[in-house]
Length: 170
Image (cartoon, rainbow, N blue to C red; front, side, top):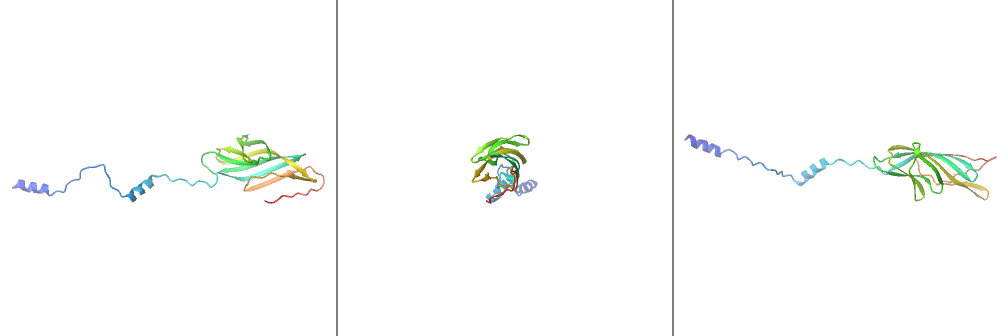
């Protein structure tokens, strides 16, 4: 009789699940798990670089005005190469340096353009010349400036007597 009771007791135990390599998850839970494994993409700056300051110092020498320029550019990208317009191609670029070393400059459309992978703040020194044009006794110097956060310009003109200086807007 003891055998019968033991046999009945074994029959009443819950059945153990057999081990498997399968996990059932609904689609929403699965996609949530996938999203948790992704590294968030940092936001990309709307522009690769910006010219924060530009200081031009020029001297008229006959029919030419020679300028030295100090530009400060901020590279907003963490990696890769950027292009920075320096001076319009209607001027003659004489020299371009970054950190005191010759810079990699190319002609890109109507602008001399610096190509660099330098990070953060970039200090650029330029020397360029532009024509002084006389029309009916009026001398003009004109060259487009790259847009910057702040621009200063000084110009030495070897003239005796008063001069009429006009800076067109726009």
